[in-house]
Image 1 (cartoon, rainbow, N blue to C red):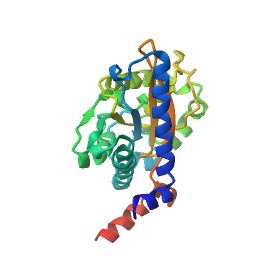
Image 2 (cartoon, rainbow, N blue to C red):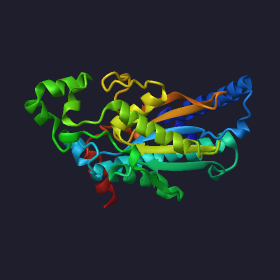
Image 3 (cartoon, rainbow, N blue to C red):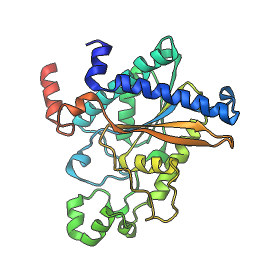
Image 4 (cartoon, rainbow, N blue to C red):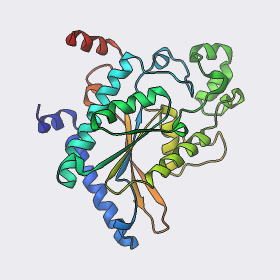
Length: 290
């Protein structure tokens, strides 16, 4: 299948190119209006957040939090599918057409939570490109205290009011040692900003992390930074396993970066063609390879 057919099939190619051209023009226009010399501003072109693939805990409804749980076989299949899509969309096809030359004319920096499920997913993307994966504990999932390692359905029987309160975002889970959401967002976002400031303008920064952590990082970068552990922005649902979000930075005269959310909970085309979370897909692929 050639690239034009693939673009028509998955619906991403043309739309993504047009969107990124518009973003680039918007950034250039904004910088001129502010009197900013883009050559002197160290910003990545975009930040791509990627949730790890499925684990046995995900499939069993177990709260994992900061507990180290590896990908299961289906999660590795998801990571491979997503990594191939990311390389096609953001490294090979778009980088070449937008900036000229080969995909090697652009840079990719990869950071990841040091928990194995995120690191495995990151390596699935980075290894074929010969990129280093920088593990960082500050990108770990939200800590769930006494609830880690327990099934949600079991907790619902044991602590019905607290679990319902957690699901209703009233902070009832905090009494069990669960990390406050604003803290999760701040520690993760500050880590992303630290790495972003090291990037050159032709760099894409990839952040491999976890569902709750990513949503809170994005909340923080968008300016939803309430100090109350309960008063936190609830507009973003957790992303699906091995799906991604894209944020674009824009320079400000003050030297700060402001951020726009370009895509959220996006996945490879194959995820729309089958049940993404059923491991029957993995079994089918294994049979075809045998």
